[in-house]
Structures are given as C-alpha cells and as structure tokens.
Image 1 (cartoon, rainbow, N blue to C red):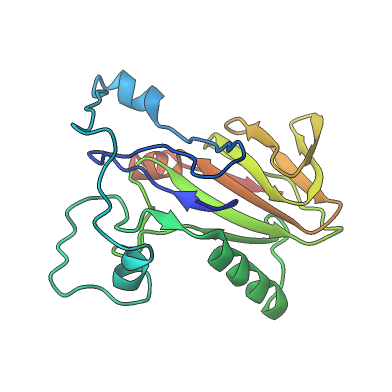
Image 2 (cartoon, rainbow, N blue to C red):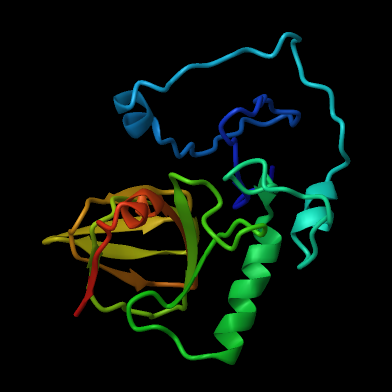
Length: 213
C-alpha cells in the first residue's frame, strides 16, 4: 500500500490490516454498509490463523488481468475486479498523459473511472471509484448528480463550492457532496481528487441522473 493507491476488499474475501513501517499509517475506508445492513446481509468470518499466508507475488494480478490480457480459463467467479490494488503511480501517469494530449472537460478537468478489467464495469458491484486531475488555476462549472460522493484530496489544494457553501481543502483532506447538490471545484495548484460513490447501484436500478450547467 502506497499513498494514493486504490485497494479493494471484495465480498467473500479475507483481508488483513497491518503496518510494517515505523510510522503511523492512515487510510480511508469506503464501505457499502448502509445498503448491506438494510438488506440484512451483513456478516463477517475471521480467518482461522492470525495472518493469511502470501500465495502470490506482488504484481501477479496485474500481470494476469491488468495488462489487456486475461487467462484463458478465467470464468468471472466474482462481480468484483480480479485485481485488488490499483497503484497510484500508474494512475498518475495516465492522468498526466491525458492532460498533455487532450482538452479539459469544463466540469471535471481530466476525470477517469476505475474499472474491472475482466468486464469493463465498476471495480465493485456497489461502489464506483473515480480519479480526476485539476490543473493549477482550473475552475470547474457547476455539476450535480443523484449519487452521494466522497472525495479525498490526493495532491494539491483549493476549494469546492457545494450548494451555497465553500470549503477549502488541501492534501489528505476529505469532503462529501450529498446527492443532487451542485458542486464546483477550484484548484490553487495542480490537484488530484479521488472519489467514490453509489453510482453502480443507482445505474443498475435506473435511478442515476446528472446535470451540467
């Protein structure tokens, strides 16, 4: 795990938390507990040992599933992506390349969504994840959608107007844009925002809407 990495813990998958460094580590968890609890499908099972054994080398999943290739016997056993770690170094390189080779979107700057490489869909069936680059001095036009979105500032600093209120933010800050509230971003320096939302659920139910002004 490195700063800016996007990491999955899919349903029916054991996972451990740990810190092997000599400094404190903080990460942001994005959970679908409200929906899962409402459906009465929330439960947990502990791994029978203290720590799981490592069965694959680091980078194995990206080699198998994240390089425009797929094992011929892969049969989509899960709706979640077969890769659990989306390294920020790769993501940042893509954002920079797109910024150098195309026009900015007036509402999002350069914005991409994380995908399940096996299906082209969302990395998890209930959570969509996104990342966007806002160049220094960029001011977005107001945008709103029916999804509730949680943002994390990976790099940079600036502010967002959400409804009628303006919030200043800097690196590592977290802020929320509630459903159908207009939001516009302003970057004081080159900024990268990570965000996640319940968009996959809303789209599956035919409820998702957006508005640009």
